Length: 176
Image: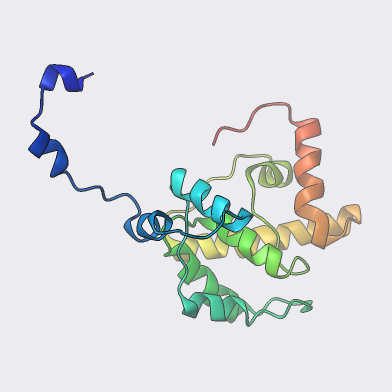
């Protein structure tokens, strides 16, 4: 491992380096003049772990088209939203499904390693193709509904129930 003392760079060399980590959010956080609140702390945390997802108004408008009280998925709207979310830096299928789940838990649930494992008996392997990811999610939701019907658990709580059930019955640790 190289150490700065061994390399002995000039001051100019160090001062001319360009810091380019999440430039838009870094600039925003550097210019905060307000009191800190939970929303700001969460932005800082997401900045640090490099998981801040910047969604444009198009995606937000589409997400807001989902009726919170709907009982059935609008497949074309869901596909469109998922495609845009999955193209967003920092968002993969588990995060996209989490966003949808909090919009309407009656039709969407989180695709998660534990829930997937307890339903299918295998580890969740996300598809690399975005269209395949979307098909995978719809397939997951269909299987999840079948499990809910069979074991008479509410779909709206099924991701949480089955997450806890997997922790109880599958003692192996999940490798992320």
